[in-house]
Image (cartoon, rainbow, N blue to C red; front, side, top):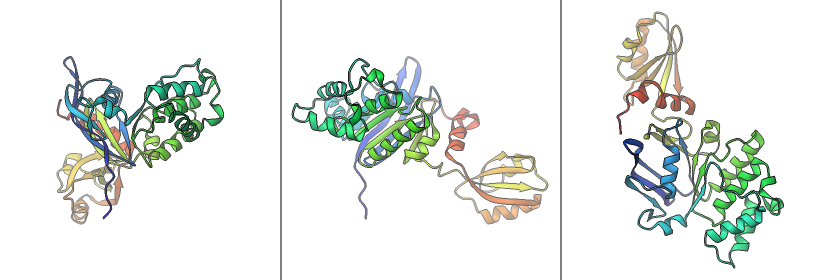
Length: 312
């Protein structure tokens, strides 16, 4: 039996309040070595607050964060040694050369004088910066500045990388390069990646965590919501959507055209029995349909699903 990789980060009942507003509410997740977890949500959903809580930049109102088995509040130094963080705007000094900047970051991370040259050479190579080591950061393209930002997060070889919008503002070629780097790093580390770009999630993430109004509304595979199986049907004499919603095994019914409907099914649904029931309305088409990630994101963060969610 294959042994599960060790848990490198976990949040338990994590909450953060700003006055009377709850920015993150009862957040629970685990992240193992070799996984890339995509953090998704609309603007204001609590993504940035979640990243700051996970990195120890702000203190939770309730709950706890563990990094490599160390509680972030009671053992912050041990926990943060295992962590590398790239904020949305990388903390760069444009007047420094790449090598100078990374040496400075290495000293801040506590690397010894003996260990720093090897770590620097390895990180420059992994991030594709060896030929740019003596260039001024202010003269680099945005794509290369992002590489320098990732390099400072990676320099001390952390077990966990937290990346906030690492491809924001990059052109397609630069995006492809950064995604390839994230995939390579994700083989041996745990990565939490916050992004608005759904193709990026599909390209590099194993799982997704979707937030809405501070609440965790989904944690699952990056391909689709595993519970969102359904059917696309067309009927010769379509009834009201409420009549279809009342059928056994139908969790929800959404119009998909003049004579078409998308039926979301419960786990107890019997497709054969459902097909027989639909013949009363002249069944013309009956085909399986599974939500893609964009469908899932929209359904969970807009409309009735979002409005009907319990408050924090």
